Image (cartoon, rainbow, N blue to C red; front, top):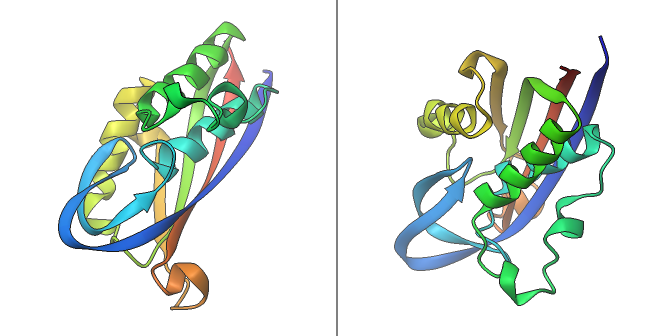
Length: 162
C-alpha cells in the first residue's frame, strides 16, 4: 500500500473582549470572551488539518491556495479551505486513514467540545470518528499561549492510496 504522512501547524493570536462571541474550532462555534485574530475565521484546527493533508499530497500550504493578500479570502470559512485540501487529496487518489490533533490553548477549554469537534471533522472529511484523535494541552502559563495571547494546533494525518 502507498501511504503518506503529513503534518500541519497553525497559530493565531487571541484578544480578550468584553462580551461573549463565537470562535470557530474544528468546524464548530464555541462561545468565548476571546476573539481569534486572523484573516480568515481563524479555525486553527481546520487550518492545520488542511496543511497536513496538503503536505501528505506533496502540495504547498493553504497560504498558496488562499493567500491572505487577496480580499476574497477575508473572513473565509475554514471549511472551504479544508474542502479544497480534500478535493486535491481525492484527485491524487488518496483517502484519510487517521487524523491526530493536538491543541495548545489555555482558553477555551477543549474537553467540553472534544466530541462535537470530532463529529464535525468526521462529517467534513467523510470518515468515522474512530479515525480521529483530539488531545489538548496548556503551556502551564508559559509563553504567549500561557498568557492567553494565542493558541495553536498540530495535526498529523496518514493517507492511503485508493
